[in-house]
Image (cartoon, rainbow, N blue to C red; front, side, top):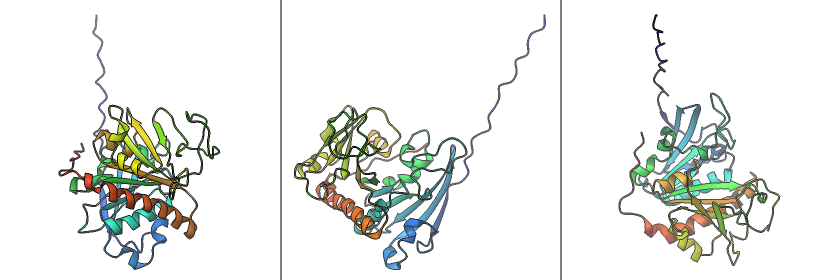
Length: 303
């Protein structure tokens, strides 16, 4: 009786995503809406801008890295959503003021990156995974050169969706998201400002304090100081990563802050209002918490 011949296993070719292309660019000529708002050379004095492009898994990524040479050990400013323009405005002000590195995800003025080979568009703030090392390595590269802390800058839609909230319904419940001092669930626990002083007179202006489930809320970076200063604080309890930078940072023992404010629109006065609320939180938090800087920063090793 003849023996059956087993077919050889299918061998997949080695995955080759190609090079990471980094190009120094003139910010005054960059074809992008954020840069188009800043055509005054004075806005870029002392700053340098790199264009970073690479492929990973199913996506093509395009980032801008803005640095202040000679002051690279300042914070890592992160603006993941290309439609949250007040975040870019606040980051640029903060970079000039404190130094460091600013990473901006370019997704053609959209919240998600639609440059994908297949499947749905990708939220740039849900792509931090150890199994996808290129993306976090490019966003977080300055950590290995003294960048500290990480400060993410966001704007959000007014109000919140109270459908799944465990908090009593208060404030504007006509929104579509969960970013509000009035929203809570098993992960997000809010602590509202008592005085409601600026910029926390707005339910949608909040600071996130992220901690591991094995820790206490006050173990989050800068949390005790922000509580003492009467911030609107959303405590984020992390059990397993959801792919966000907040989760990635806390599981890799990196100091992280996230400041949010209401998206008022893109008119100059509205952008300035959102920018000013974010820079207020930046200025006061760094003044309170800069002394927590560790002597030796953790080194991230990307596979």
